Image (cartoon, rainbow, N blue to C red; front, side, top):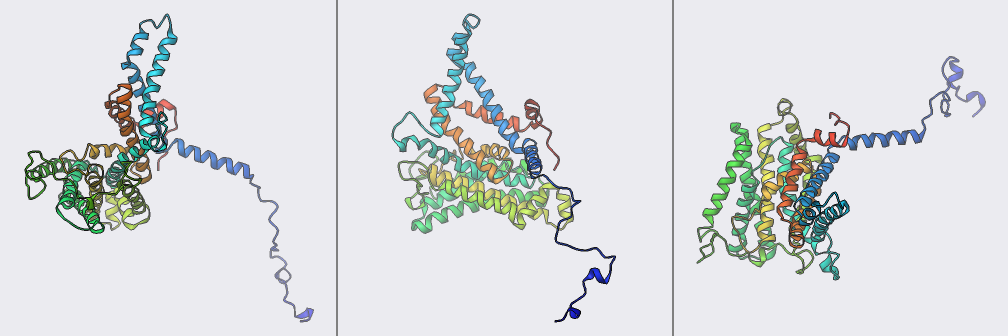
Length: 424
C-alpha cells in the first residue's frame, strides 16, 4: 500500500479535535496508596467500633467482670482478709485474685483444656463436652434468630422441642428398622413435628393477627401437657409397667453416632448444628425466601406493597424456626440423653436459645460463636462448682447479665466511650 493510500489520521482531518494518546494526563491528581490504605483502615475501624459485633463482645466482658466481683464477694478468703484491709491490703488483693483466677481457670479446665491431666485424650475431653452442649444451643439459637429476622419473637422453643423430641422418641423406640432408615426417619419426623408446632403460631399470626408472643407462650404449655399425657399411655410413650413418666430407651439404630469414639460424649448432633448454620446462612443471604424474610422484618407494610405475601412469609419462617428448634429436641433425645423421652428433655435450651440469638445478633455465624460460648459456660460451670465450691448458678447470672447489657447498647457504648452506632 502506498503512502497516499494510508488512512488520514483523525487529527489531520479536524485540527480542532483533541489528540488521544496512551499517556496518562499529567494534570490528574495523584493518589498516595498509603493514604488510600490508611483511609480504608480508618473506615474499617469505625465500622467495627460502631457495629453490633463489638457491643456484643463488650457485653460479655462486662458480664464476666460483674461475675468476678460476685465471686470475690462470696469468697471466704476475701472476707477474712477484708477484716484487716487497712493493715495489709496486699493480702486482700491477693485473696481477690486467687478467688477470681481460681474460678475462671476451673471453668477453662472444664470447658476447653484440662492442663492438670497428662493423658491427651482426657486433657481435650472438656472441649468435646463444650461442643456437645453447644450443638442444641446453636440449633435453638438459629430457630429463634431466624424468626427475629422476620420481626417475630419466637419464645415457644420449649414447646417445639418437647413436641419434636416426643415424636422423634416414639419413632426411635417403637420402630425396628435398619440404621440407614431408622435414624434419618426419626430426625425428619422430629423436625416435621417442630415445624408443625411453630407453623401453627405463624399461621395464627398470618390469618388472625394473633401476637406470636402470646401464642408461643400458650403453645409451650400445650406442648408440655401433651407430652405429659403421651408419657402416661403405654401405646404412645410410656414404659410398660413403669410409674414414672418416661419412655423406653432409644434403639441403637436410632441413636446419633459418636464423632470421636466411645471415650467422648460428642455425637453427630454437633455436625447437624454446623450443617444447619451453613443452610441458614445460605437461606438468609443467597435465597429469594431469605430476601423476603429480611424485607418483611425491615418493614412489613413496604414488603406487602412490593408484592410479598407477608402472611405466607410469617407462616413459612415460623415453620423453619420450629424445625430448627425441633432438631434441637431431636438432638437431646437421640444424642445427649438417648435413655428415653422425659418432660425435662429441653433442659432449658428453649429459653437459652433466646440469649444465644440475641448475642449472635440473629446472624448464623454470630449464633454459632454465641452457642460455643454458652456451651463452654455450661461445661465449665460444673467443674467450677466441683473444684472451687462456686454454685453453677453463677453461670446463669452471667448469662442474664449478658442479656441485660445487650438490651442496653447505649450503656455499653457510654462505659467504653465508643462512637454512636451509624444508621443503616
